[in-house]
Image (cartoon, rainbow, N blue to C red; front, side):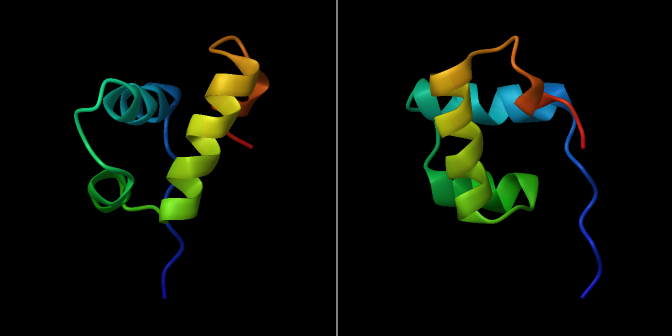
Length: 60
């Protein structure tokens, strides 16, 4: 299995906002952004706990 490419800050924010605005489910977002459901849930949780200005948005 190949390694997935890191997601940009913009992609993470779009993903989180789509979920919070009730536009898409976690499963739909995971498929669209080609990440696991647990990754989407982690992005959402970190956004809610730490906000936009947090370091979690940047690539590791």
